[in-house]
Length: 82
Image 1 (tube, rainbow, N blue to C red):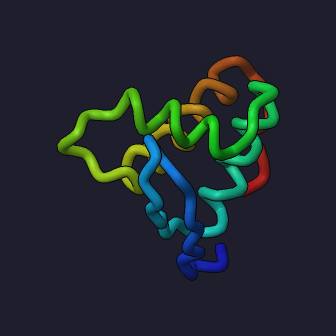
Image 2 (image 1 turned 120 degrees about the horizontal axis):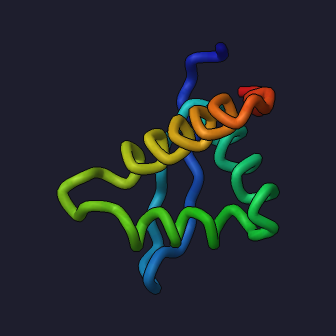
Image 3 (image 1 turned 90 degrees about the horizontal axis):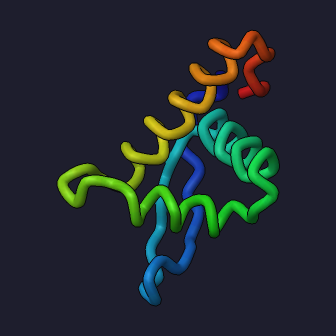
């Protein structure tokens, strides 16, 4: 693990925002987007739209990445490299 946070800027619901996540979580989210044949911004927008407003976006993204890895493991697939 590299341990450092990587900040990315994006536009959600017409508002510019930035999210800081560990590079391993960005890699997992990019893998999720590829698996769903969608861009990373579209995936993040979908996670944002579905999250509890009380949960910070960064937390929701980490939980989504973890959940996707757990589903892959349950299906017997190798987890994506983080």
